[in-house]
Amino acid sequence: MNGTANPSLTIGLPVYDGSEFLEETLDSILAQTYTNYELIISDNASTDQTEEICCRYAANDDRVRYMRQKENIGACANFNFVFTESKGRYFKWAAADDLLEPEYLARCVDVLNTRPEYVLCHTKTATIDAAGDELPNDIIRSSGAAEDPDDRVQNFDRPWRRFRGVLLGNGNPVYDTAVLDFYGVMRADALANTGLLRPYVGYEKILMAALALQGRIAELPVSLFAYRLHPHSVSSQNSTSAQREWSDPQSKSGSYPRIRYLIGYIRSVFGKCLTVRDQLLCFFVIAQYVFQVRKWKRVIMASFLDRGIGDGNVEILKQHGIAKQLADETNVGERAYLKNSPDSGA
Figure 1 (tube, helix red, strand yellow):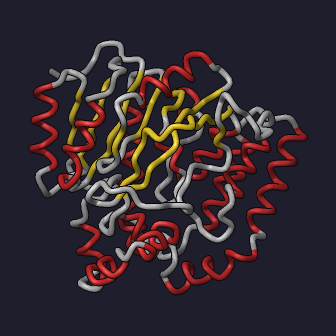
Figure 2: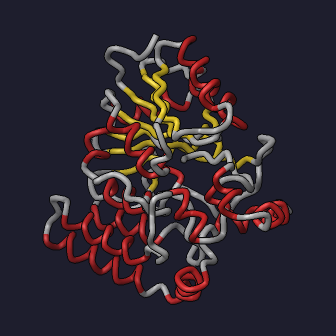
Figure 3: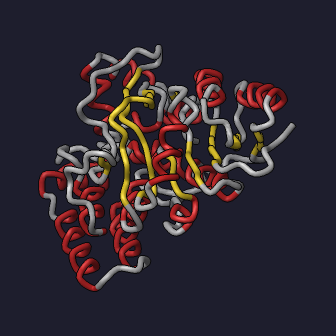
């Protein structure tokens, strides 16, 4: 039993050694009230019980299609792989440790079905810890271009305004944090037009910027998505080397990829059918992004001292007394720790 003949939606779940939370995540996906979807799982050569769990779920539900990579191809390539295997006109990435409320897919698909100006729909997010308990969080949010489709207080009618929202954020001038609407339901044709992910941690922000240039981004004002934050996740690692190993284990580069982000933003502007005015305004936004002086210290630290990447996640861990566990475990050997961590997106 593998696959659904004509799914309107594909959920792509890339995973590496995700057995700690995987069953809970799969249960939340398969309990959705919206059922016309396929779930593609790409196992990135896991060494734990991930394969056993996935095979069991695939055997019990026609919508689940399980594939296993022969070797670890890196998280970014694995994310791209599940999209290239998709059939639906809508697509959603899922992490192996996050959770969905039963109405999540139905609410998001309804917006995309009825509001053609939107290319992505997500909901408000709850941040949870390893035990599933909610963590207060005023740092990690959706992109600054997300809006309530029924209460559009932001003036996101122009592409450059949405582009600015993604690049310059939504009130967190110091932290480079996750854009959680990256895990929303997207139009597959718009996603294909972004160029997908390149092998650098944080490149999802460039992808979101490219999406925002194509259409509006909806965020429903109800929390139906739970983002799990725990010391074992790669986004909680506060060094470039650990995150680089996760995104591309074959990478030989030791440089922090800020220049790659800048190139990605520039490409996204050239790659879309924008008016000359919108293009010029987008380049002005890129200049504002470059000259965020308050971030220069962290950029230098990341580039030359291999520190200071997962700031938003690490800050929340610190606030809730979880960071000490992270530090203790990291000290036993960062590469071994990363290789065996049940991270959500590898």
